[in-house]
Amino acid sequence: MSGSVNKVILIGNLGRDPEVRRMNSGDPVVNFSVATTESWRDKASGERKDRTEWHNIVIFNENLGRIAEQYLKKGSKVYLEGQLQTREYTDKDGNQRKVTEVVLQRFRGELTLLDSRGGGRGADDMDGGGYGERSGGSGGGQSFGRSSPMERRPAAGGGSGGGGGRGSSAPIDDDIPF
Image 1: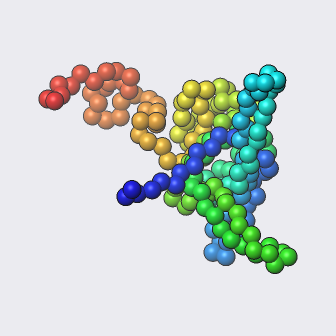
Image 2 (image 1 turned 60 degrees about the vertical axis):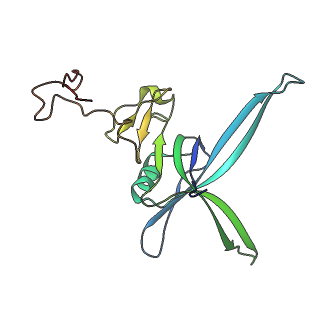
Image 3 (image 1 turned 120 degrees about the vertical axis):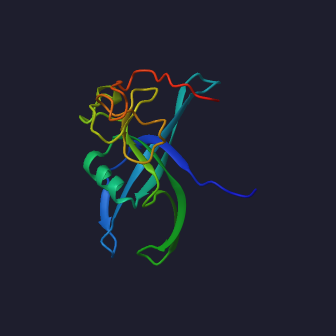
């Protein structure tokens, strides 16, 4: 295999409020945990079972960190994309420890808020905040990372120059030679 991929996609709820620290350079680092829950029905008893996994999240991206600090709180539902990274450290008792974290790097990663600004009822009542709303199967949310051009909504308003006065929803009837 000539290449490899290290990409993590999570949708879950924050287990604690984001914590912001500063590195020696002054750059912010945001930490929080996200819970993902898998549920199923036990075949033998018919009883509903759940299993929750906790994921440590670290954001080195200054803009995403600022958004996390402002808008996220314990219980918030988020979509995020990052990479797995394992690091070693020495705890306060002198023991060597290893921890695996989902890291959103300085120029990589994505964070989408799936709750409404009021923190309550879901993404259906999200108002447009200008940070690139993404529409999806369950309503949408605020997307604060990279997104492909196919996921972005067209700009609001009429045609912007050279469009012959066509609105953004008018079909293009150019003859394409292929």
